[in-house]
Length: 111
Image (cartoon, rainbow, N blue to C red; front, side):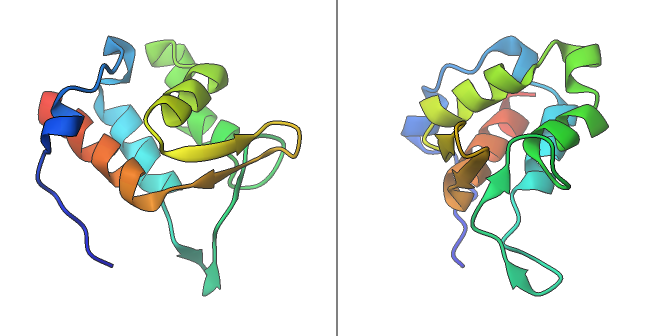
């Protein structure tokens, strides 16, 4: 996989709410942005009520308690930045690994 770690003009202009500009959210992104687990390819991540879900990782990093970041705001940010296709009805996101990496690098650059 080719990963571009440079900030592009596009990501520099992204509006990212202040509450997301912290190391806890960067670590959250790093933990959900996986290609495979135990040798099994991951193409969807559960939103809640499942092992390894977005909600479980958000709780692990105490994003709500420390930064006021709730599940809906995470999903909105992912949708706005093209990081995931969200299917609330089916309780999963299909994440776009490269765009999550761009988001992570942009947040790191702003911290």
